[in-house]
Length: 375
Image (cartoon, rainbow, N blue to C red; front, side):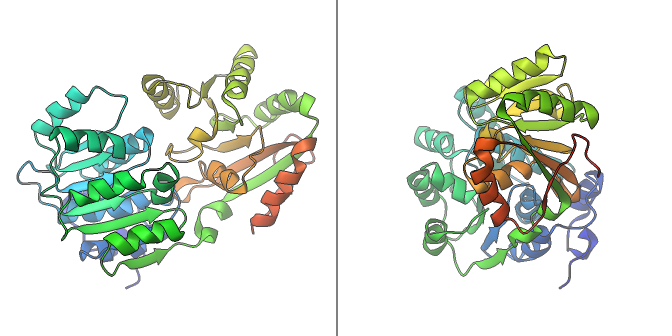
């Protein structure tokens, strides 16, 4: 079946109303391929990056298949980070706006008693990080006996973070006859081991990396003297009237220093890195999301998972050592079919790693001859 529009899918009026309100018209490749098998109750392995619409790919079938009657937890979504748990819960809440479903994010760094109260009041779908989910299971404040659908989101990242035993423990507490789906940016042997051990004849959906927004991103680079990098950055911001961007640095110290330098120059910039407390992170992210901050200066803690719409520019102030990190970073723009621009300021000493990045992408990274972008 060729799915061109959401109307081509067998969805309820309530879900369709939410989809239209969110402005979705055409399903992304992962949505077009994953929604039908998941609606049919099949296990699904989906290879897709953040920003390709995979939350709706598993969220829509979950809303359609679960029963809002009763107060038991029927859907469980595991996420590697607090930020992702919050964002995915928000997105599924938007999709289920016209249904009675209750969705709850569960993560560390927030008082557990508040979560216990919410769970006691009745929740249908829990979106959580493995550590806090296990905490609730051991306290018996969360019961997975009624779970019908489990989704492991960003599975490769959860494994990188050492969550394999946590995932196995959580899955052991859910019914054997559940539907299990897994979504991952990369599908390697460790991810496939989970699929082989916990899934039944899964449907495999691989969205090729060529489809992952990179073709919609205008990529540029400028070779600069490292001593002049800050002045070059300011010139690019000024000459191109950049209003909404994430600027990536390698270190926490560099991030804070650059944000302070930009603020001293009169730019509306704030730092964002792993040294922040959860409440500080939430404050900065929400301010950026609500356009109270124009420039977010971040370490790679923000290169995956932060789903903020309408970021027009990504600027690599420091070139990452790992080429895949480059693609994760620039994927923060060009979300859900929109265009975007990525600019890399390459210091002389960073040329070897940047050349490595250029060899790994089939898209063109154009060298800038001036500070002004012609787009």
